[in-house]
Amino acid sequence: MKRFDDDQNCFVCGRKNVAGLQLEFRRDAAGGAAEADVAFPVQFQGWRCTVHGGLLATVLDETMVQAAAATGLKSVTAEITVKFRKPAMTGEPCRVSARLTGARGRIVFAEGRIVDSSGQELALATGKLFKVE
Image (cartoon, rainbow, N blue to C red; front, side, top):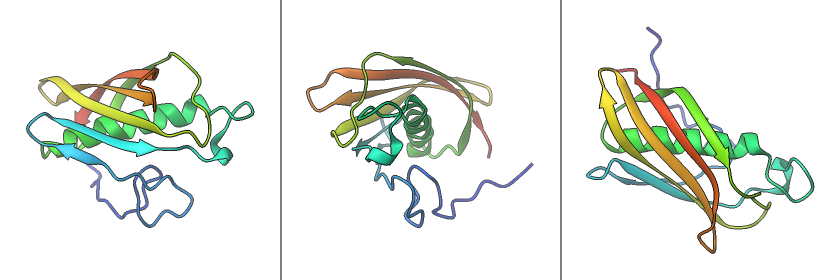
């Protein structure tokens, strides 16, 4: 199996990726959770001033993996389902969070959400993560 090593070039959290978001995650090992603050730059828009939904899904994906990493698990996303509730606006502060909800064998279950600065839900996700080590 391929080794999954962090070379700091992840689009979402990599410190070396100058084109990426470079999010700084706060992890809670006891709660199996992670969160980060994000404001999407205009180059990540779909419609004018609106964050492209694919970027919201990408950030939710990484946050669920970070929640698993908080507990010491290295994983990759096997499946993700995203429900978009309200458009996210470029340049506006948001918070993304995720937590583990269960496990069965090599699969870990997680859920995540993105909220705006007033706490309104912008997107929700559920995911199945595959343990890689």
